[in-house]
Length: 637
Image (cartoon, rainbow, N blue to C red):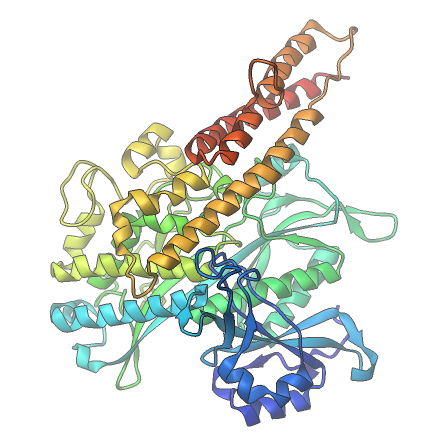
C-alpha cells in the first residue's frame, strides 16, 4: 500500500492553467515538485528527459515557455535531419495539453513530510534549426488538422451525408470536429530473474486459468496502487484485470509470492488524439515505477515469451462533431442505429484503413518484437480484415480481425474503430497520424462518390474477385468468422494478403507500394518520411546483428547433448536431428558459413533483402530446434 498521503500531491496542471502566475502559484504550493522536464518525442518514439531545478524553471519560465531548451542531433533520433554537423534542436513546451508530475515513489523526502520527489513533465515539440517541427507529436498535430480540414470540405461539398448522420443537418451546424482516441495497455509482470516455463504458460493460457482471475500478493497491491494513482492524475481508469497469459505464483518461506509471471491490462477513458498519446506515455512510466516499487519487473514488449500470448495495445479511433448548439454527435454513427452499421463517413474511414494498411503497417509494427506477436492463434491480428457484426443489432466481438467496429445501438457517440495491431511499444503518435491519413483517403472516396451506407456495406462485404469503386478487386475485406479457424493459411493470404515477416519487408512498402501516396507532405514531408525509414531500418539491423543473432547463438549452445550410451537409440536419433540443425544455424566450416554468419555478413554489406530472407529461415529453424529439443529432454530420465 502507499506509504505517503497521495491527496497532498500535485498530479496534473490542466491545459487551461498554463499561465505563468498560475503555474508559479501551484509549484510554490507543492515543494515536492523539485524539477521540471521538457518531453519531446523523436521520430523513433523515444522521449527526452532532463532535470531542470524547479527554482531555475520558476526564475526563467517566461523565456523557457517561448524558447524551450536546446539539445543536439546526437541526443534524439532524427536521422537525415539533425546531425553532428547540423545539430541545433530546440525542445519547445506545448501549452495545448495537460502537464503531469512524474513522482519518484522510491525517493520519499523527510523534509517534505514523507512525500515523493516529483518532476513536472511538460509535453514538447522538437524544432530543428529554429523552424522545422520534426517530432512525432508535431506529425500527429498536423495529421489531426489535416483530417479535420478534409472532412469539413467533404461535408460542405457533399451535403447528402447529413441524411445519414443523426443530429446535424448541414456543415453550417458544426462548430468543430473532435478526434477521440484511447489505448488499452497490456503488459507482463514477473519477479526479477524468473524465466517462464513455456509449456506451463501455454497450458495455463489454453485452460484460461489466469484470464480475468483475482490477483494475489504483491501483484494485487501494485495493481491497486496503480489504479488509485492513475485516477489521481485524472486518467479516469475504467478497469484493471488479468489478461490471458501467466501462471500461478508460489508462496515463499518469507510470506511473499515468488515465481510471479502474470499478464495484466489497464483501460482508461478516451480523450483527444494528442492528449491520448501523451497520457499513454505517462501511464507506462507510472505503471513501471509502482510495480517496481513492489519488487516486480514490468515489460511492455509485444512478445516477451515465445509460444504464448503477447501484449497488444488496442487503439480506439473516433470522430465526433460539436454542434453550434453545444450538442455532440458521432460522425461515424448512422442516422438510425437499428437500421445501418455506420454513416458514409464511418464506412469510408474503415475502408481507408483497410485498403491502405500495407503502408500504415510500417508505423505500427516496426520492430522484430512487434512482428513476433502477430502470429495466428494468439488473439493477435494477422489479416487485413474487419468485422461489423452479423446484424446491426448483434455487435461484433470478433477478436481475430485487424480492425473492428465498436458500436452500441443505445449509445451512438460510442461508435468507433478498434485497431488491434499496435503493441505497448508502438509509437502511438505515428499510429494515429498514419491511420488518419488513410481515413482521409477512404472518406474522400466514399463521400466523393456519394455512396449510401447500404452501398458501402456491400462494397466492404464484397467477395474476392469482385470489382469495386475503391477497394481492390483481388481482396476480401470483411469476415464475421474466426479467421484463424475458418480459413487455412493459404486461404488467408489469398483473401486478405500476406503479412510482412520482417521489419525490412514491412518498411520497404513505403518505397514500393503506390498507396504510400496517401501521406500528405503537409503532414509528413519527404525528409521526415526518409528519416523514419532510416531510423527503423537502422534499428532493425542493429538489433538483429548485435542482439538477436548473439541470443540465438546462446540458445543453440544451451541445446546440449544430455543422453549417455545407456540411453535409448531413440534419444541418439533425436540428438542427431538436433545437432544437424545446431550446425546449420551456428557452426561455420572451411567451405560454408552457417545461417547466423551469413546474416551478419549480409547486414554488414548492406544486402538487407538477403538478411531479411535469412532471418525468416533462421526463425523457422530455431522453432524446429526448440520443438525437437523439448521432445528430446522429455524422454530423458
